[in-house]
Image (cartoon, rainbow, N blue to C red; front, side):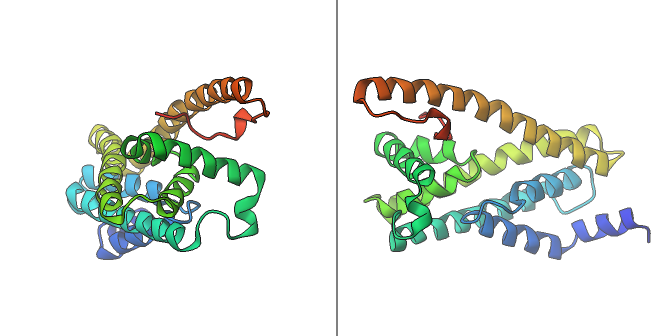
Length: 219
């Protein structure tokens, strides 16, 4: 068995989906693991006929992502957003304030949109936990956010896998690159708009606000 055949065999095994679940759970509170990459890779291979049905990837990913976000939520409920020294660093503190402002205005839309921004989404989830937002309201919102987020990645993966089904590894690489580029296309304009809004708030309130420290515009 050559390395490519071995990789495809592993990708189609239950071990791959267990690893996917672990990565996404950890990604919910520690956003430095390749959770989304694993979703895209497995969904692409599935769509190209080299794995379990795509719906299995979707179900596993949504459930695991919701569990990971729930852990971050309960960490925020238990620890708050200022207990540790790193939470009080100016940049981090500004991120928590941004999250608090967004959640106070449109919690449902904000939770879904923030899911697409690495690192910031953890701050948003922890802030939601530290806020008065009831758990019974947060959990359905977390499930919806995970569903929208996962469906986006799976859709890109299915398109690439179907288009390049003759070369599943090329399809996987193309899908991952596409997701990265689309993510940048979403995030960069959001940062620019956040900067404009931050400068407007600074002129109205007086104190200087660093616009580049705001990770996402309010939606």
